[in-house]
Amino acid sequence: MPRNPGMTDEIIIKLYKSGMSFKEMGPIVGLSDRAIRGVMYKHGVLMNREQYSGQPRKHKVNEDYFKVWTHEMAWVLGLFVTDGHVNKQIPSIYFSQKDERILRLIAKYMEADYVFATTGPTKTTPTLIINSKEIKKELEIMGVIANKSLRVPFPSVPEKYLASFVRGVIDGDGWVQKTGYVMNVTSGSQDFAAGLFSVFQSWQLHSDITITVSPAGNPIYRIWVKGKHELPKLAEVIYNNAATDNFIFHKRQRMSQRIDYQ
Image 1 (cartoon, rainbow, N blue to C red):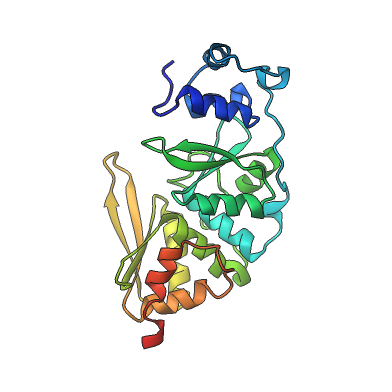
Image 2: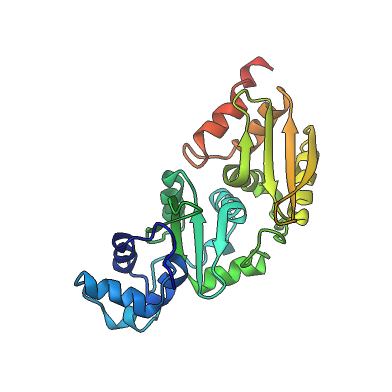
């Protein structure tokens, strides 16, 4: 089987040395166990029996992380619902973000080993890999499962933490106009789009939903907030409980630039 684009020998060896088993590496690099083993032999990399046998190494992580609501957890959940991926075959989840700073912060919050790879169409998007059967199970209870993009529900988030969750959603799949007049979140799930739209309405924001169709024939929902007074109102809500760094800096700047002029 051909390896995935961008998966060089150097990257494959780096993933292996991070502690991943051949079984975990397979879906990421696009190679069979035998082919991965061949890369190790080619470069003289010593292999341990645990990884060779395909048993996932137990990476450090707080397995109760998604069981206790905090503002940080709600933000991480929002990021994962929009930009995360659940591996269908093995107990692993992946966070992908262009801003690697965000991934390192997530790892810190989750008390997780920083196991890093690259994914995406060009295989250059930084990706945090977390191996945990318990965390995967907890996300599944919330309805966040493999191939979730078209059917993920809007989670039942306690009111106290809803703004932090929405901040994570916007950081994950939100777009903010440079001038600060328009923001939208893109989703393939009708249920999620309807839930987010309902939240914006409850915050008395001028919001709307538009629907287009993808080349594959699937609906694409965009949930909008528009207006020079509306985005500052949204910013004041979602950044109220933010720390000094758990957000995408340019999105906050764009939404907040008119707060002093209202």
